[in-house]
Image (cartoon, rainbow, N blue to C red; front, side):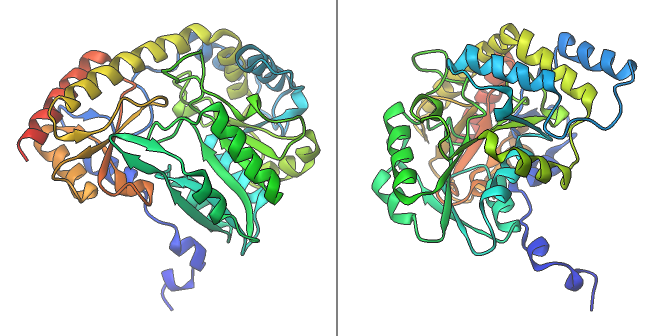
Length: 389
């Protein structure tokens, strides 16, 4: 028996990331403009870095609270009061080793082998892998796409709920489509979950990256009652340019506290305390820095989408939220091969839509959280490529 044949079938079935494939292929190429991953080009700001480095130098390097240091959980409570107008005690918050870790723990808490989790597709692929590595089955509902816009069919969503369904995973604003649920849609999804006695995992990582009315996207917090079966997954990565820190959080009913603490203990045993000090600074002092990121994202979104729509070969609308243009290009049917070809021919790196599951194969994803001047160069290169097809 070979080494691979002796491994767990679940581990062997874990798919290679189509996003990482392009990153590995293109990394280090001269003149490349990387729009491949969901991160910006600004480093973490000094006030966050200093808070973490001061704690590191002060010796905060020991084992720490499994649920997160009290100061960080209290800062999360203040953040939600400020941005979501809700009063949640610190007992609702749990610090995780990234947004991905938060999603994985939520899936572990709610599903067992043989269960099902329904999700909206195209979707960031990690939720599917996290669910299926745990032995449950991820069931996709492809969003509808017409005239450049994405929409949710609520009747189709409810039709996928079966006796095996334990949760519905909802990412809004969406990576990669930019689809953003209205308050009415969130209320309807919650009503479906209530009728069937199932949970909602709400990925609201991009809640503040909302280009419509108001300062954030609609949230399940706007329509739910206290104590309902909703778990929120979030991350420090996008708002404050902290992707490399690998810190996130969960918002969940306090009754789940010991369960989540146990899952943290047996996965990463907690986030380094000095990193958490930086996260406190991000929450309490980072609103202005986030606004800088938001302004860059909105300007770059307009540059990229306006340029590509003007080719009359790209079917898309400016996304309502998140950090991505999801582009359907006339003449491209194999997005993986196209992404590699675009790297070679015009030195712009995009993520293939095929990496995002059902409904994404004909699309390419571009992350526009970058210097608008660089995005303009990338947009012009992409327009030239598209017009040459």
